[in-house]
Amino acid sequence: MAEVWLVTNRKLVKNRCLVKKVESLCRRGIDGVILREKDLPLKELYHLAREIRAVTKQYGVKLIVNKSIETALAVEAEGIHLGSDALPLHNARLIVPAYMKIGVSVHSAEEAKTAAAEGADYILAGNVYATASKPNLAGRGTAWLSRVVQTVYPLPVLAIGGINESNAGEVLKAGAAGVAAISGLLANNNPGKLIEIIKGQRT
Image 1 (cartoon, one colour):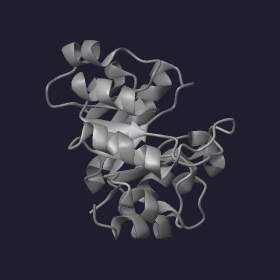
Image 2 (cartoon, rainbow, N blue to C red):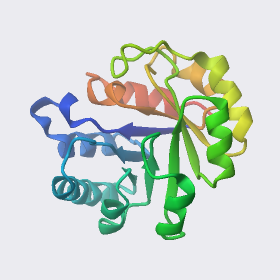
Image 3 (cartoon, one colour):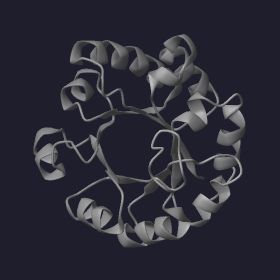
């Protein structure tokens, strides 16, 4: 069954009540949360992560913290996520405990190949379609996504970027193990429908 992951952006949530939104999505069946609040000071990030961790534990949902190994360790998250501006993966692997997953954002099959060779546990590949979060970037398309998937197989690839109810099926046909979404879950009046469509697909 395909997985659904939330990538957070508290600025998209009404009244910025991210924790309540996360709980609502956990109830609807998401599989994981990548806490990605780049502009938050470390102390505030820790407090937010602790609140979200309490929710994800309650629902058996995985929590990955973007970039901040310190925060991930402090709240006992399942892993960390590294973007292009983060600590190199091989350095991160020396710091984090063996049980922690390390995910990497990639924008090409070559980047995916490197991440896999360095020991990534999963790949976040995007953007597949045009997306409001990156307005100046054209979507790379499902053929590109398929190349990424084939390059790192059997490593799981989560697809991100402009994925909605109408195109999620094509993304999964391209071989993605699941979908990660920001506005598709946070700014969607009916996120349950998207979750249902994705989780109804077999990978």
